[in-house]
Image 1 (cartoon, rainbow, N blue to C red):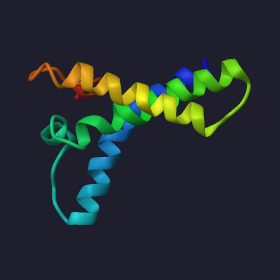
Image 2 (tube, rainbow, N blue to C red):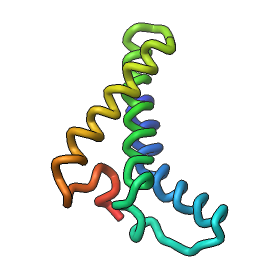
Image 3 (tube, rainbow, N blue to C red):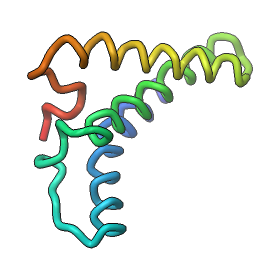
Length: 99
């Protein structure tokens, strides 16, 4: 329950925080709503939260951390991004549709 909760919190807040950080670094004033369908902002929350969820659950089940499991989790999230984002022009990866 803790792994899933933490990953969903990261998934929800990572995108808006990345836009805030980009605005600070570039001295611009964009909102997350304006950038939620543009790379890399549309992938930040789903990728970080998804990686944390997959890697956390794999590690929890197998009772150990490893680079191999981290690579498998990263590959699984990348494949999910490709499968759900490339064929559909109007589909927003979660949680981007919430804003």
